[in-house]
Image: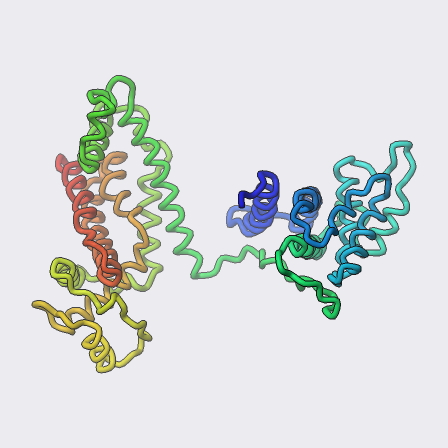
Length: 436
């Protein structure tokens, strides 16, 4: 069943609105006035919420197996009676909805209308005193500048329940249950938004910054590689490009960018300090992720050799299943388990496989994707070649570690070796840094 455009977009908008509030209040580089921020999000949320619910009511009418929802669209009646009648029909049909949900919904609709029309007055200039009284009775402020996070919690609670009630009418085979009282979703608190950065957050922030820097450098390289009349694909037809292997195409792409750099192309100059920023973030990330302490060069090289042998000789756990083990599992138990799971050891010993899997899992955790390898092997040598000695050293270390992590994962899952993928980055790094 295809979801209607506006049912879909209203849902997305409310989700992003909630996420945007938390992102704004917890942003490490901003210091927001929480009361003003919460009041603003309440006002925006009320507008989107009422629009979403009314769109859902209208579109769900054709799926309504209880003939309830049309009551909302009766002509010539007030909002008060419209919502009251809708609730009464739910109850008459054996769905005992919570009255306070509908009472709050009416109050929020009044608040929404005042915000949209920027007035608490009627078209003739009279104060909507009955609406203000109802808002007060339901415990909401009649000055929309005084809406709070607690009001936003109630807005979300009402929205969730109204959507739940509407959805109930369209479920096939659902029987009325008059014996169930006050059907609904319980209220929940808003996520914490104190903005305090915990020690575990810092590595994530550094990693996120590395990914953002890499994304920006990628855009610069694309502009350089595709510069007018000198772009990497200028000498090929579309049909010829389809016949060329992907690694060859990528190599031509990066060599075109390298040529642009040597020609001092304006679009590939590090005016924003990306190189220094990326290096600082990587070094901070490594220093704050304790697992990196296990990655000495000799051990990584040894484990990489073991994992390559395992993948070349199809040495995998039986049925690709290896039960998880606690970190403090005694070696004897670990050795017995690996002995049962690995029937074919080839030229390896159980101890070598245990060590390879232990370090491989840590490496996969430490370097979750190819971003740092791409950054240090290719992107930074193109952007800041004057520091190629540093980039070469970092790229070699990351390439080995990344291959260890990916090889561990491939071995468990029964996938092919990642070696050829990593070799491309090793080769490109040699080419891009050879003149340094």
